[in-house]
Amino acid sequence: MRHTLEETLHNTGIMVIDGAMSTALEALGCNLADSLWSAKILAEAPEKIKQVHSDYFKAGADCGITASYQATIPGFMAKGATREEAEGFIRRAVELFKEARSEWWEEEGRESGRTYPLCLGAVGPYGAYLADGSEYRGHYGITRDELEAFHRPRVEILWDAGADLILFETCPSLEEAKMEAGIAEDMGIPYWISFSCQDGRHTCEGTPIEECMKEFEQRDKYPNLQMVGVNCTHPQYITELIRRMKSITSLPVAVYPNSGEIYDPVTKTWHGDFVSGRYEQWAREWMEAGASAVGGCCRTVAKHIEEVSHAREKFLNR
Image (cartoon, rainbow, N blue to C red; front, side, top):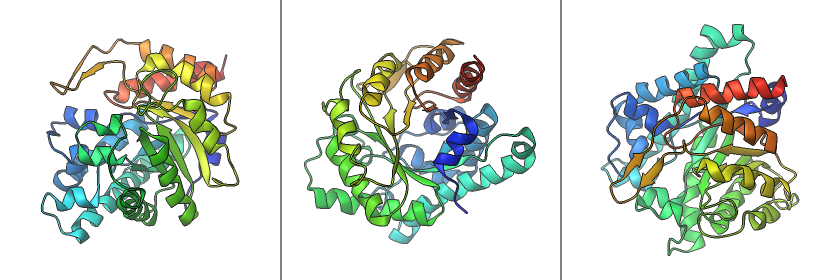
């Protein structure tokens, strides 16, 4: 039986999303210096992905994002896998989540009174497969048909494997998001779309966020769309983005930005330090601005999600 976003939001008041998979895997000793990024661990050390999911449940996450952001059939095949093996690795991303969820639920979740975590089948943008930074630009130079042929098989695998909802995340462009939404609508399955933004007004490709919201506010065109939002964006832009999204959309809004550290694309390193309590303050601000779900993206770990959980408790009990 699949679980729904609606019941999770109802049970939690505000849904806590988990944090970065890659950062947590690196902390466990995984080397992600590869075009597959965290997806390579699906093949090399799947038990560590399972551990990351479990750690986020313990930190307070009400849902989790599968380790499939950069898991693609052509990506795995380029590394020597057969198509069947590649499909199996993508399916494994959902299976690992479900195993971790079941074990956590039996060990402590059920007794704690928490909600049963929602499985979000992650689909990253085409640029994530290219691994050249274009996931933050959105200009790929390929046709819509080619883009759809790239995305559709992964969506089908994640759904067939038992994801509760498909999450099209880090979308840099409206056109790619529309194409992804079209796949989900063709399949008649629930999904949410999360954009990456360059500032408090525009997606990474440069489209005003209000224009994106107007497109997806067409409920007759996108009846299976459950939520919209922003991820992989600097925290300083999130409050304004929430307000701009909520001025247009009737859907719940989700935000899971980066930690606040700054990424250097030349050295491929992050700079900045974790400041205790800062993410909690941000999370409270985003909830006050109207976010229905809050979590973390790049460089966030379990302690960030604990802070989001604390912020929610204070917000709901204010």
